[in-house]
Image 1 (tube, rainbow, N blue to C red):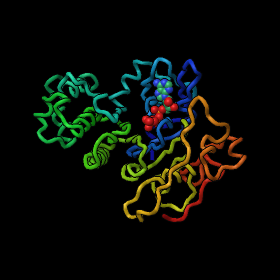
Image 2: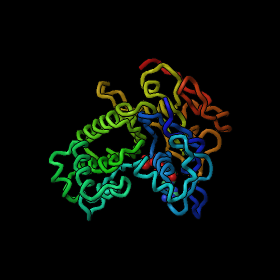
Image 3: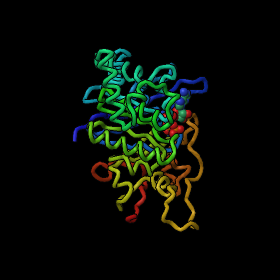
Image 4: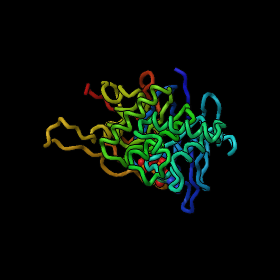
Length: 328
Ligand SMILES: Nc1ncnc2c1ncn2[C@@H]1O[C@H](COP(=O)(O)OP(=O)(O)OP(=O)(O)O)[C@@H](O)[C@H]1O
């Protein structure tokens, strides 16, 4: 299948008074046409900064130091601000955990969705209003005409998230980046939004980069997975290989899997947690970044840094001693 997005050895750093913060430190990943890539990892692993790098939504003290990002075969990581603003919203859209980051509290839903359509698609005000209502229908909002006239504060959290998805998909982007879009919602609303995103992906053929810290959500949403740790991808694979296969996996992925609560397990069995914490980005360990927390680490791991190596077709691991699992 054709690759829609390809990131090769990306390094995005923040220059701070205390030193360089290597938020993205050699990330390589790709997203295929029509696929969902789930990006998972603990807080601070560089998931959001990888997404921000794709759209160049940078702070003043932040830039790409090395590597490249290709979208539909074109290198977009060297685009200037004008070229980038055409990509944003048109080809690639992003939704966030908190819809109010994207929605403007003082404008109606109609004004916000219409603005995107008038700017990127050259629609008239009247056409844009009609299309805005159509988009609200597409994201299964009841009473779309009414909601179109509403202000964000008049809507529930779940509805705001649907409006944000409608706005992001209004120009039919090829890629939707969703950064923890359901984390702030209660579980039933979360399930509805995830279902909706899967449905829209099927109907519109949009590829999705889905960022989460929750492997359970990845299992529901993703075709492929990239596991991140300390600004690097430590494992990437088709989702089945992570959840069911008897293949090797990265010890960090194993740790994330064993810390998922399961409903059918004996209540007396304890959830395992990964010991220790993610190292501070200004104080990264030598060798493998996960070695200080890894129960399989050897002297070699503490000394040398492993590369991301393919272990089977489509499955790559950054580890000297991947874990062999039995069938789950
Ligand atoms: N504005 C900033 N200035 C300096 N460092 C930053 C800034 N924003 C993020 N970082 C650092 O970049 C690294 C990666 O952060 P990022 O937000 O991408 O992680 P994440 O995996 O998305 O975490 P979370 O799940 O909490 O959103 C972290 O070490 C973070 O401290």
